[in-house]
Image (cartoon, rainbow, N blue to C red; front, side, top):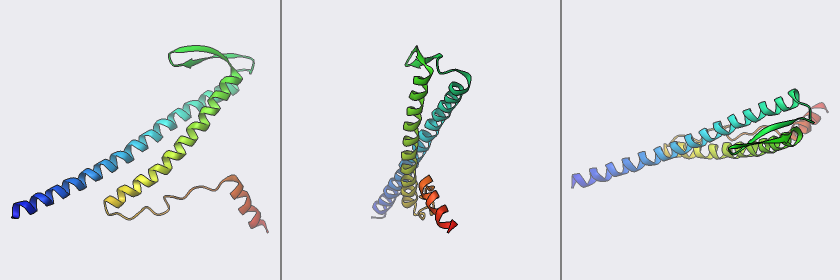
Length: 137
């Protein structure tokens, strides 16, 4: 009868460790996605700076689409990169929100308290303006 109890305990420990490992892997995967998207966003920022400072709007630049290069006007290229930046910003923001939830789930599985202050977000420009107006009075 003692062996059955030990087998059950071993099974519970194994299930617990598996849950922790899966949750931790999920957190790490999301963090890596954020890092990868942030690198892409930085490369786009560099490209936008180069387009703004090094070329006139009448120039054309070679843009890589898949495995071919196409000459595109600077203004159209800038617009494409800016749209890509907006999409990257949204994806990164969404992933950061997901990450907060996943970290709290991992902490919950491990019996750790939820991270306090981790779900805070910065004020929007409008909110900041409203607070400054209130403080001036």
